[in-house]
Image (cartoon, rainbow, N blue to C red; front, side):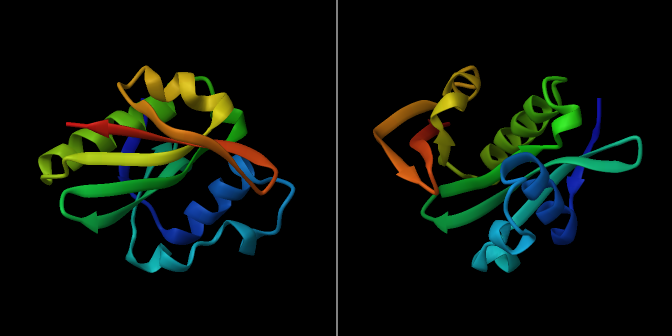
Length: 136
């Protein structure tokens, strides 16, 4: 499929905007903690097309945020490849639990990877989310 690797933060922001918030300005998709995150992505035919950002919280806990794939490449398995790579990498780094705030309409996708819903749904920026976790 694609080539997985660390991705420049400027490319991360472009993918985030295209895939998650196309109606918002680029500054909306930036996170204050981006400088400390581990940004990984997939390059396909020389172009970055999918990314996510991992934030290490200590005590074996990590959160991934802003997981997106360019619209033109969605549904082709690139996101699944990236998520699998991230889970394997985190497990090898000694992370015991990884979580995300999943959009409610995407929970079936995460469930296929063994993630489970925890807590109650909540709203942020007119979108419904729920916390999902995977413990290794």
